[in-house]
Image 1 (cartoon, rainbow, N blue to C red):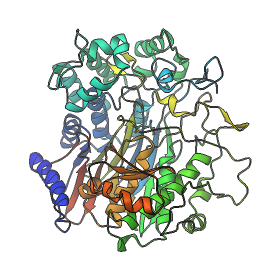
Image 2 (tube, rainbow, N blue to C red):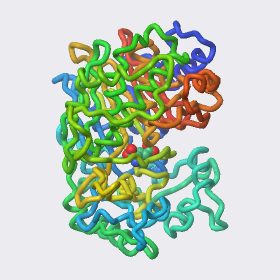
Image 3 (cartoon, rainbow, N blue to C red):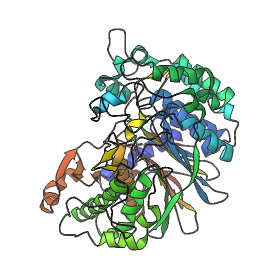
Image 4 (cartoon, protein in one colour):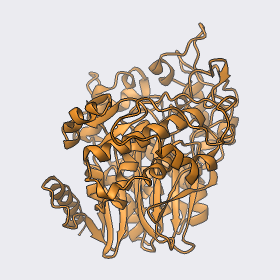
Amino acid sequence: MRRLSLWLVRLGYLSLLFGCLAIPASAQDQGPMVAAANPHAAEAGMAVLRAGGGAVDAAIAVQAVLGLVEPQSSGIGGGAFLLHYSAKDKAVHAYDGREMAPAAAAPDLFLGPDGKPLKFYGAVVGGRSVGAPGVLRMLQMAHADHGQRPWKTLFGGAIDLAEKGFEVSPRLNFLLTRDKHLRTQVSARRYFYLPDGAPLPVGHVLVNRAYGETLRTIAEEGADALYTGAIARDIVETVQSHAGNPGRLTMDDLAGYRAVKRDALCRPYRGHRVCTMPPPTSGGIATLQILGILEHFPLHTMAPGSVEAVHVISEASRLAFADRGQYVADTDFVDVPVTAMLSRGYLGSRAKQIDPARSMGKARAGTPLQKKGDGLPWAPNSDGALPSTSHFTIVDGQGNIVSMTTSVENAFGSRLMVRGFLLNNQLTDFSFRPEKDGRPVANRVEPGKRPRSSMSPTIILDQQDNPVAAVGSPGGSRIIGYVTKTIIGVLDWNMSMQQAIDQPHFVNRNGTTDLEQGTAAARLEPALTALGHNVRVRTLNSGLHGIRFTATGLDGGADPRREGVVLTD
Ligand code: GLU
C-alpha cells in the first residue's frame, strides 16, 4: 500500500503535466501519513505512527533520521519551528526552536577589523556563525505537551540506520561535489569524502557510529544530554577553538537555551483560517500579508500560471517583502507592529497600490501604525536562496498534525562536525551591519537574540477549526513565495496537494520576478517584461511537503525538486 501511495503521488505529477486537473491525482488515504524530504525519514515516522505514536512522536523520529541522511539540511545541531494541531482541542500551537546568539555576541560579530561586513562564507565557515541549537529542546517541549510514546523509544530507527549505514543519495552526492568548504574542515572531510578527496559516490553505504552513539545518549538522558555534559563540552570546544574563525558560544549559552511556545499567527483567507509561525520568523507575517492583499483580487477567475495571476501575486509579494525589510525581527527584542501589519484595513490599502496593468517596480514599506516610518526599526533583507533546510508534515491516526521546518541554515551549516552531526551557521541570518543610515538595524546581532528567519510552517483550518491542509518548504526567503503559491493552489484553484506543489514557481522578493527554469512559467517572460517586471529565469529549489484533508481522506504531496516521498498505510 505504501508503494502504491508513492506511485499515486507520481501519477498526480504526470496528470498535472498532461493537464488532467479534474482527476483526483494524489495519494489519498485515511492516514496516518508522513510527507518528508527523504524516504528513510518518512519510514521512521511511519514506524512510530504504526506503533501507536502521535504526530509529535513521529516528528522526533523523522528529525533524528533527517540529521543522518540529509545532513546538508537539518539536524540536532540546528534550529526549527513546529506548528501543532491538536484534534482534541482543535487548537494550533507554535513551538519556537530557533537558535539563540551567545551572551558574548555583540552587534559587531560579523564586522571585520576594518569595520566592514565580513564576506558571507568567511562568516559562515567556522565557530563564529554557530548559535545555540534549538531543535532538541523544542521537540522535548512539544513532546511534553503532546507525546504519546516514551521519548527514549523514538530514536531506534535513526540509531539502526546510523549503525548499519545508508546509501548516499544523488542530492547528497551533488552537494558534496559542489561544496568548497566542507572539505576544509577535518572531521567533516573524514566523514563525507574518500581518502583521495573525492566526494562519497551515490550508493556508498555511509555508517555514522558517532551519531548513533549521540542519539543513544539523547534517547536515554533526554535533550539535556546535548545542552549540558560531554556533548555540550565538545560543541563548545569545537566552536571556540576553530583556528581561523572561532565563535563565542559557551556552556552557559547551551545550558540556558530555551525553546518557546508561542501563539500561532492566524488570519482569515477565503473563508478559511491560515495559521502560521510568528516572529522570529518573517515567513508567517509575509505569507499572511500576501494572502490578505490577494483577497482583494478574484484569483479564482484567473487561470493558474496565467500572466494576470503571476503579476498580481508577484505585486502582492513585493509589498509584503517591503514591510518585512522594514519591520520584522525577533519580537523579544524589537517592537514589530504585527497586528497592524495584518489588519484588514491596512492590507486593503496596500492592495490599492496594485495596478493589474503595470508593475509598481520597487515597493516601499507601508505605515501600518499610521505614522511616519521614522523611529521604526529597519531590517534590510540580506538572505538568499539555499539548498539546505527541510520541511515535513505528519498526520497521525487521531488527526493531530505536525508541520515543521528545520534547518542548519546554509548547506552543511558551519561545516563543523561534532559527534556525528553538523553545527548550524544560523547566526548569519542576522544582519551583518548593525546600523544603516545612522539607525540601528532591527535584525542586528544581540546577546540571546534569535536571528530573523523566513521559515513558514503552515496549517490551514476551516471555519469550524477542522484541518484543511498543512504545508511548508525550505528555500531561504523564497520559502514565502513557495508556500503562498501552494496555499493559493489548494484554496483558490482547488488543486490536490501534489498539483499545488508541482505548479511552476514564480517568486518576487521586491526585486526581480524569478521564474522557474524549464517550466511553463519561464514562457511568461515576454508578457511580464511588457508589464514592467524585471524577469530572471532560474532554478527555484523548493522542498514543499504537505498534506490536504479531503472528504475521501488524506491527500499528500512531495516536492519533485528534492528527494521526498509521501508514505501512508
Ligand atoms: N536559514 C533560513 C531561514 O531560517 C532557511 C534557509 C533555507 O531555507 O535554505 O529562513
